[in-house]
Image (cartoon, rainbow, N blue to C red; front, side):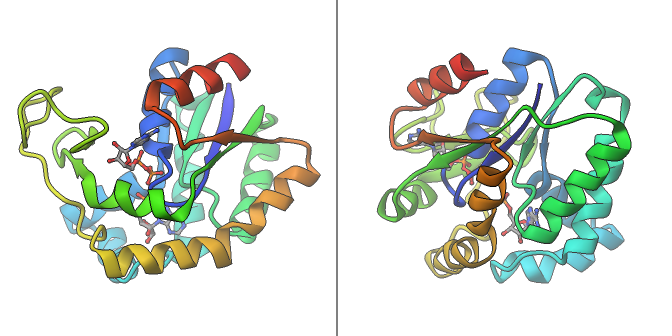
Length: 212
Ligand code: ADP
Ligand code: AMP
């Protein structure tokens, strides 16, 4: 099972990726999560990525591609993976093609989660994440059992640093400009599947699972 989850920021990629990873026993590889962990730990990668992330810009292709190459070649990704948040540019998609070719494997599908802009804004403003285990909640659509506390590990939930309205608008613009062209890229390769993401989490999940 080798899947790419695409869609604008806030579409629900992380939410669906976690559920799919569990259902199919393959790792979720989320470049945003990898970068946030690096920022938190203050590693050289984190120091490089921090400024771009805070501004809602993409981290340079060569930085992110190196990380993904290494991660995809790890043992736990041998039987498959759910890529979440990568690729985000045409050069990244071309690099992914090369990496997969080196590994002698192919993508099964690219799932494009479609959500209108107005709804995305709602999702960002209600998003809460656990800095400890990475679980994602929404104050209205997917609330934790106890307000502000992670169901999975008991951690204190926070608002992501880049989820303020100004950065969110910028991230959606960056998506429109740099990532949306990937829709045609994967359509041409006959890998693209569009999914209506403007429905409850479980409904979206059941449809994707059914497809796979
Ligand atoms: P992405 O990884 O694409 O940026 P997330 O998975 O973090 O998006 O989801 C963004 C926010 O929207 C989170 O607060 C999440 O709980 C919520 N969310 C995800 N999918 C849905 C859905 N189908 N309906 C309503 N809210 C959702
Ligand atoms: P995400 O968690 O997917 O919303 O990503 C958060 C931020 O991490 C983005 O706004 C970018 O700054 C950075 N990022 C994540 N994935 C990539 C990628 N594939 N290419 C470039 N930057 C990325």
